Image (tube, rainbow, N blue to C red; front, side, top):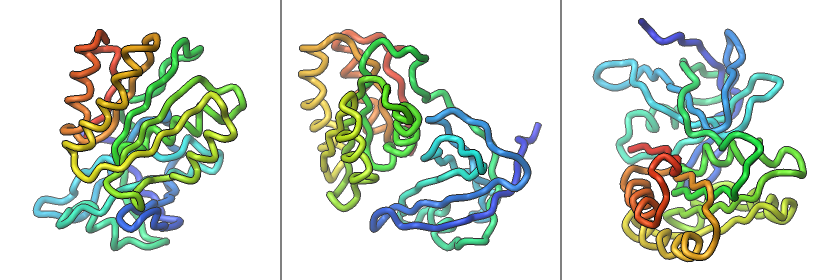
Length: 234
């Protein structure tokens, strides 16, 4: 059975960093009902066998207007990102969804949430944070976000402001140029957390090469595999 698909109009195109772009789009048939952390599948008319299916996480919670926000990075020779980088306001895309189980723990949240992200893996977490801290009584949470370069840190000033406004939220931005160095850096940051504090709600998002070793490390320190929530791509 074919997935229910609808068209959406691009309302705006914004470069967030030198290599990351944001699209705000408006579905034309019906509002998208989704949970923060979920993703949609875009059906792109490109590649050897179109449509090309590409998954993109939603960067903002559901809005009254029905607008949704997608964020993606420029992949060298990437068919999907190459096509999307050519789009402008007024163009249309086709999407299906939402999909995914990478969503916040059910409320009331009884433990601190540990968000660990690499680069655009921050996108679904940013959506969760905007929902969790929509009121002044958000849960305790720590975000450790690593980017390949300092100018590729996504939503950096927004997250700094959130940490100032919401004392229960802590934000630690880091830079590591490769997957391997990012994993090593993250393990060095996570180690004192798993050794010296009560169990947290770990939520990891990034490429498979980034998430797999971090999840394995947490399991080896005593977390059940099901306790470590992950979202992977690439």
